[in-house]
Image 1: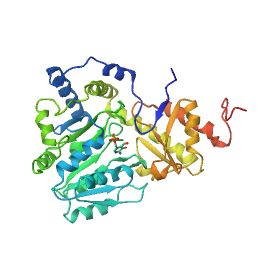
Image 2: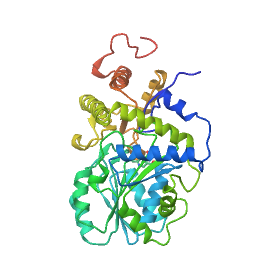
Image 3: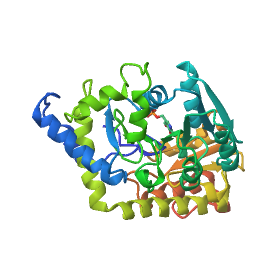
Image 4: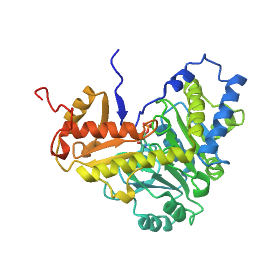
Length: 371
Ligand SMILES: Cc1ncc(COP(=O)(O)O)c(C=O)c1O
C-alpha cells in the first residue's frame, strides 16, 4: 500500500484512526430508538462546543452548501445582503440568485476582511431581512470579525444572520448564542477532522420563527420539517449514520483535548506559519485578519507551486495552491483539525529544503538527484 500523504489543505483533513473505527460500527435503523439516542447525544455535545444551548441542531447528509441553500430559502422573505470577500462568501450570493431570491452583494478587494461600516450602512436602508457572511474565507485566508458584525447586526432586529463557519468552526472559538448568530453552518471535513459527508447547522429560534412565515421553503432543507423530526431526535430523510457515529466519537476527543487547548493549538500553528510566511514571502491578507486555520501566502518569489506539490508528494505531504485566479500567485497551508506543531514544522522544513529558502540546503537535505 502506498504511504499516506499528509494533508495540509483546507479540507478534507487528517482523520484519527479511532474515528474510522467508530464509524465502522454495525448499521442501525434511523427510526430505531438506538439512532434517536445517538442523535440526542450528538446534539447535546454540539450545543456545548458551539456555545449554543438554545439553538436547534441540524445534522445533514449533505455538505454545508446544501444547508446554506436551506438557510436562504427558509429565512429570506424580502432581500438578502451577501457580504463577499472571496470565492466562498460569493457562494452565498450565487445560491440566492440560483433560487430566485432577491440579493445584493457588498464586496471588498480579495485579501481584505469586510468593510463593517459599509455593511452597517447597507443594513440601515431597511431593504434586507437576511445577511450572509463568511467567518473564515478559505480562498484568501481572511478571518472576519464576528464581534464587530454582531454589534452591527444586533441593531437590526428584522435581519436574520447566517454565518458560514465551514473552515473555522472547531479551530477557533465561536460563541454562537452570545454573538446572536441565527444560523451557523459547517461541514465536518475541516476542523472537526472527520471524513466528508456530513454538515451541521445551529439554528436560533428567531430563524425558525422566520421560516414559519415563508410559504415556499424547498423540500430537502425545509427547516420546519427538520424541526418536526428533531422533536423525535431524528432527521426527515436518511441520516449519514456512520458519519454521526464518527462525530459522536470525535466530539468526545475534542472535549477531552479541551476547547481552549484546541483553539490555542490552532492559534499557535497559525502564528508559526504566519511568522514563516513573513520571513520568506508575505501574507496575502493583513496579519490582523489572517485566519487561524489556513494561511494564504503571497508567492512573492514567483516559485512554481504545482511543482512544489509534486515534490512534496514524494515526501508524503500535500499543501494547497492558490484558489481560482490566485493559483500560483498564492499558496495555502492549512493548520486545522488533527495537525500539530510537529506536522507544521515538518512541512515548512521540507518546503524550505525543496525551494532552497535561506539560500542553501539544510543538512542532510537533497535538492535534486545529483546532490
Ligand atoms: C468557507 C467555505 N464555505 C463553504 C464551503 C463549501 O463547503 P462544502 O463543500 O462542504 O459544501 C467551503 C469549502 O471548502 C468553504 O471553505
